[in-house]
Amino acid sequence: MTGKFARPLQGRFNCTAFHVRDVGAFNADPQVIAFQAIASVLEGQMDGDPVPCFAIARGIDPRPPFFIMRQPSELVISERRDDDPEIDDRDGWIGMLQRHLADDEGIIITEWGNPAAPDGQLNWVLTFNDVRCYVEHA
Image 1 (tube, helix red, strand yellow):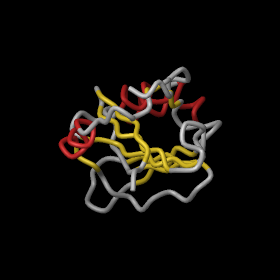
Image 2 (image 1 turned 90 degrees about the vertical axis):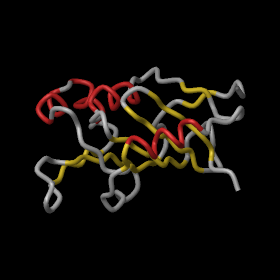
Image 3 (image 1 turned 120 degrees about the horizontal axis):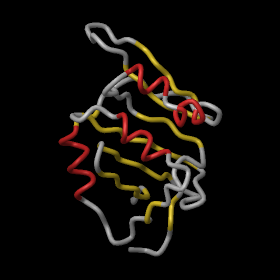
């Protein structure tokens, strides 16, 4: 590992849409409510989708809604590099999202202005039980 630590969601960010295991539990979670003080937690209904989907954003427009399934997320997570920043989730935002994320889905968060990559784009890929943080390489 690089010895460089990345604290999640310190800059401007947006994410892919995701489903949660239990909408009521997600909306009532005190940590989700606290998170809304720093970011938008967007909820909407897609045509033909029986349950609401969510996305998060701060300081940038939300992405068009699209979903990432677990298998593609796992592929990106498995491609870890030695120079990926280590994750410092002291605020618990990654853990909060993982706790609620539907088992068969993933989330990709794109972040700009994170101190771990001040001149570049930091990416977070999450499944309910794994996460990778990486800097976009040319």
